[in-house]
Length: 181
Image 1 (cartoon, rainbow, N blue to C red):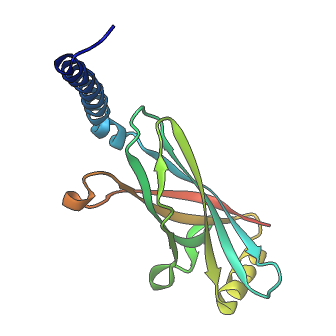
Image 2: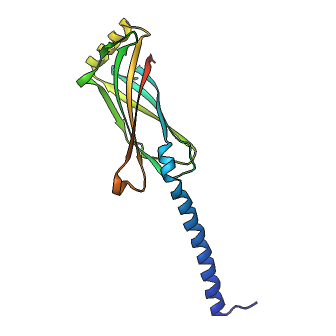
Image 3: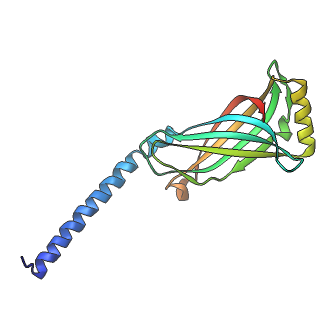
């Protein structure tokens, strides 16, 4: 069967139109999931452990963090994760280490996509000076098994609206027992 030029143009236009409708419909459905997805992002600090860095005399805290996108929306990006930590004794919350102005902090910019129904695991290392390490070791030894980390976690989610509104930040504070590795 031979097609003339006008039939080829018409067929091409129909194929292009159908493809455009599919693309726009998919994008529109994904956009409708945006705001509900943003409000359903889940995150937590799973653990905080005190560790010696292999091959050196340095010590650090290692925080394991989980961020989840339980929705069908696929346009979220884990832009930044920041952690602020101080310690207290389980039986006496006013007995603290690294409280007030000496709170330990660390952050990371993973810039990973939170795909639909996905989970990202992030490790953040909080380097300790030799003085901080000595204070923590002494505190942990004195109150063995009773040292709790007050961990304030901030998660920044990047979206297509960043150029207008900036990242969307979420915060959560948890009390987590300090473990040693």
